[in-house]
Every structure is written in C-alpha cells, then in structure tokens.
Image 1 (spheres, rainbow, N blue to C red):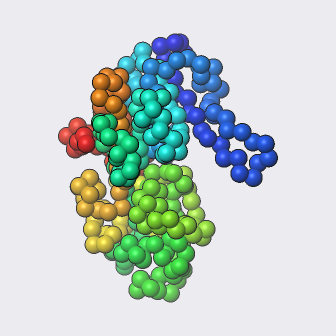
Image 2: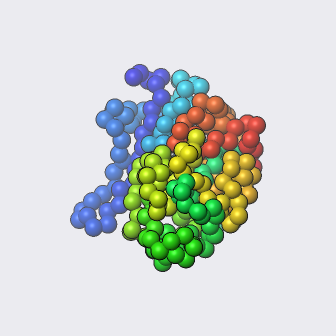
Length: 289
C-alpha cells in the first residue's frame, strides 16, 4: 500500500462502563494503523451502524478515485452530526430519516439517499400465518407474547431468530417496532440475514427478522406487516413501514464529498449493499433531498 491507496480507519468509541481506568481509543487493523497520521482527503462521519459494512462500502466507492485518501470515523449519531456541521468531517452517513431538530442542524446540506434497510419478518413456509400487525410484533419481540396461540397458529412456543445488533435488518425493528422497548433475551442472534433464513427454514415454529435476502428460499415465507407485502417496490416507496433509509450528507461546494456521495449510488456499491441485506437506491430509483 502506498500514499495513493485508499485508507479506511474506523475510530470506534469504546464504552468504559464497568472497566476501571479504561479510556476511549481508536481501533483498526494493523494494516491501517500505520497510516493513521496521513491527512485524509475526505473524512466520513459514520452514524450508519455496522462499521465493517460501511468500510467496505467506502472502499468500493473510493475506487472511482484511487488518489483519494478516505478516513471513516464510527461515531454516535449526535457526535457524527456535530463533526459534520463543524467541518471536521466532509461527509455524514446516517441510517434513518433526520429528526426535526437534526434537519435544522443540517439545514443547507445536500442529502443523498443511497440505500433502504428493511426489517423482513419471516416464518417457515408450512406456517399458516400470512400477515402480522406491528402491535403484535412488539409484544413478540419484547417477550410479552411467547407462544403462537394469540396468533391463531398453535399452542407451541415461538422460536425467535434475528440478526445481531446493528446488522442490516435491526434498525427498523428497534426504531419502528420496539421503539425503546428492550428486545427479549429469548432470541437466537446470528451474523447475517441468510443465516436467519436458514434457521427459520428448518424450524416449523420459528419466527425471525432479517434484512434482504435474494432470492428468498422456498422453505421460508415473508409475512405482510399491517397488510402490506415487503416487496422491493413497497419498500422503496415507503408503503411497507419497517424501513430505514440511509443518507449521505455533504455541504454544497464540497466537490470531493459530492462525488463520493454520488458514487454510493453506483452499481458497484449497490452490489455490496444488496449482499449485506440492504436495497440499493440507484440514480433511477432514488433522489436527493
């Protein structure tokens, strides 16, 4: 790797709770640590979740300009917005729609949508259930409802599966189903959406949540939520409610950030997004806000 290589450094804030004398330290691979002091051409403030995925996305996008040095900082949403508005970062990545207060802070910034994150609710194909209400999902994933009986299926216990925290598919679950309520501990978490599908396909009493998997196995059924099918069209138009939109924000006049944000909607990045459980928003599908 030389000075013209793309450098991606994840600066992860390490929680010191329960650790005596622990300090916040930047983390990264040994390969990247040697380049930490190189001045970046574009600093990206990442509040869009799972850092390895964002680094992979950034690495793919940066290939359009091999001379560009990129640093990705994983921050809390609040700190990421502060770094962007103060000028410490040239690009801001967000995982969901900004609140009214955040929109005020980001006033004047250009916001590019580049991905949609759905939470798909899945059951085994032999399950008679075809749709479920958001209110019932909240009761199930909080642990209030533990059997299939309230759903009219059987008296058996629901076997819960889902993707790990901050993985694609978890955002809308937390933001639009649980809404601050803690996810039940009686759930088996795995690292990817295909793994959730595989577990559900071998368990007649399973119910899981995950991101996009294409194609969906024949042994798995996607449930309608509040009467709406989780088709790609319904997800991208907002008709299906369990969706978060990913945004890339830059300030007008920052041509490096603008070019990078637009590259996030390229086919190359789209392939990475889709393989990770997200739906890419391309120039044809998406828009700028």
